[in-house]
Length: 75
Image (cartoon, rainbow, N blue to C red; front, side, top):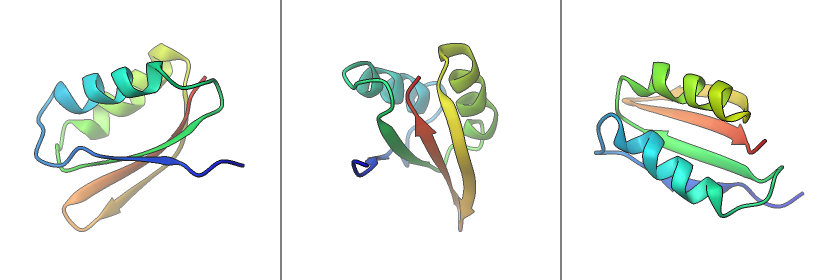
């Protein structure tokens, strides 16, 4: 299995973390894995909604100090 692509989106506020993730994911094949790290509190709502609407699988969500870490598999 290929290594997950890391996207450090700290410092960006809604809706930029999701927009940047969507843009980067568009260029990848189905099944590609991504790790998003963001400190935007709205990402706790936005990223799961983005995954559900776009057909991606949210594998895991973790809190790391002041940041959120999302593991996603592109649908």
